[in-house]
Image (cartoon, rainbow, N blue to C red; front, top):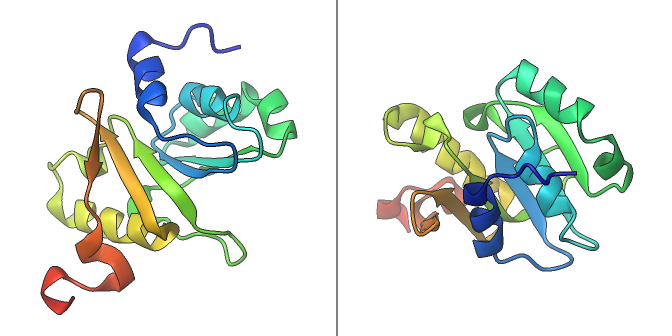
Length: 153
């Protein structure tokens, strides 16, 4: 289905530490191409893909029926700086963000809230990966864990 996945996104997916039962939060999923491709690579895992754009989420939902039927993929319209996991939602093992403005350094106040929300949504050893490395880089979240700033750890 995602034979049109760009080489760049395919390389990012290849670089992720995927395993069969992993839980993934994709931030800024756009029309859902990467989320669909990841859902096809994990057996018992789960990916929640979010985007602030209602149009992007509508496109993702429209193109992902088969993958959503497996129970491994869900979409939610939400900006990461306002994201809160649902009350019964288990923590995620990794978060991945590709070309997400809230994490690119241009909006420090939004970025701080976004990173705090990501840290809260992840397991205690959960990792955040963004594009811009070769092809990914990990963003340390230690100072955001448990809602504490670095000086309070």
